[in-house]
Image (cartoon, rainbow, N blue to C red; front, side):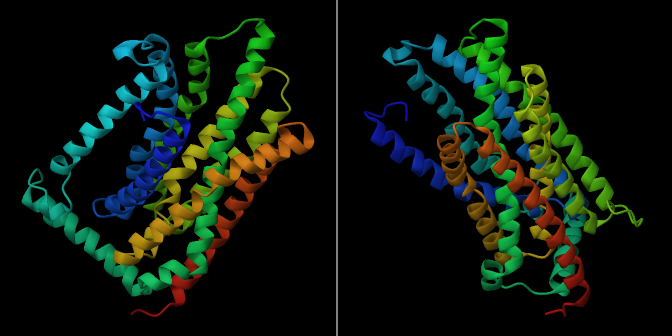
Length: 353
């Protein structure tokens, strides 16, 4: 991307990058199920996915600095230097991954033998319990209504993330207007990073709490594995409601506060979502089901700009599009509760095998 000759080539390369990322993410989610028992899975996903808000918070400022300070470096424009410097670490870490990551716990020589044995037995026992509750072959995982419903839930989560990207420039413009000043590239990057910096903290703390609650045996609606759906739905509802609240704040600081709440809610939902498929999928079915959920859910990245932009053109305001974002997020949260409840009932009655 640093050396593209025209816009068409840039678009083609961005598409190919999206193809590569499409396989990377579900592969990582599946990989984590090979290593972390259900009791620790949400926080493991949380620590992995905290890269999303952190990279947004840090990346916007760092990218702005590279673009402004790196212009002319190596005889390249600032944006080309940004692609070059930010692409090199990804390439190097890709090579390191081949040698640093172990496929399965039994291959991890950096664990003691008793640790490898304990972890392997724990994971095998959980997989056997899932299989005993009802076998899901790959074909069923790719066609089942439950999987499609989870895909829509994930669609709602990611839709909320895109709302932040649409609305933050409006907030920055409001701050500039209120104080009669113009923020530079770096200043805008710092303002944009605030909601995501707070969201990164919230994501880690919420996923830890979700795992701890799932390991409890009391009858509270947030406790046990059946309570995971609430740990997913509550931050989604919070994020969805925060969007329209942000729309009607005249003070940019209160608007930023509402958007930060939205960021926390949306990001907190991400790590609490991905343990749900592994409650009833294993093996090839888990690989296919997770990939399908991720692929369909991320269609929001294509749909959201068109819906938001189309409604803005139709109404002359960003409000209608962002109301849709809030509504989709809340509806997805309600569906998450219904899917989780249906899973609890089917687990009780499905035969083994």
